[in-house]
Image (cartoon, rainbow, N blue to C red; front, side, top):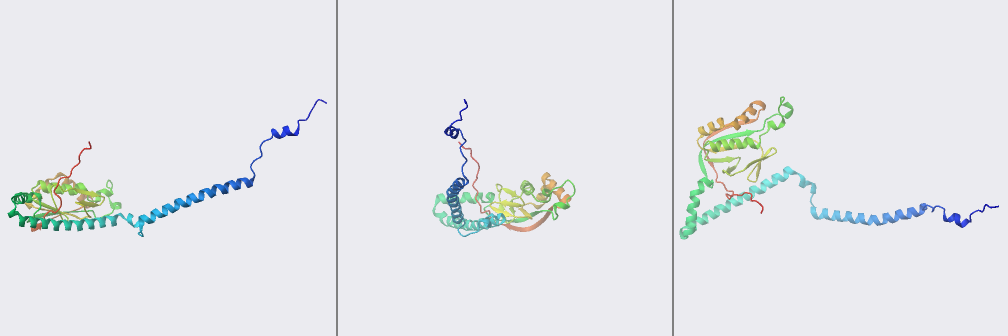
Length: 266
């Protein structure tokens, strides 16, 4: 017979390698988890430690209350403004008491006195015109077709339009809310609030100006931007009111009069 069976050893060499047993796979899985668990626990511990160090016993979520943060910031600014006003009065008193004995200081004091009126650093009294702007007392759902929620709130350009019209028509001094403003004061609105010199205000917005009342009234009536605002007063009920004061006193401006401007990076 010519047929010869291959030896048993040859058959073993060409056979497929047996798969890992279930017990071996389980041992590998336990080894993997044994390495990962300490790493995960260490990372969690680091995060808890960082959270505790940041919170220091406080509620971190409470810091996310934006209106509360704004009110707290506004209160701090008002407090510091009061301190600044007191220090400026102290410096002014000391300067006046020492000026007679110091020629250089006396010269600077005279120059400051000459510029005080234009810099608004003195109190002013006179007849005044007060303009009040307010949001419409209605909801967006009640608006006629073609109008949106933006049309029933007072915007930055509305306040600025009144301010510009009053300056143009000869206003000698001006206040917005409870702050004296000067020609470089920036009027900015964020959402439904007005930010002026670090303070935050909600409507209604009161703009008061000392000067020739009749002339300022005519300036408001002739201003194109103010007339556009008045159209929305008629259409959706925005607030617009005028009041005159026979005699009123504005406090001195107590903020910085230094110019701040951007400079190019070289």
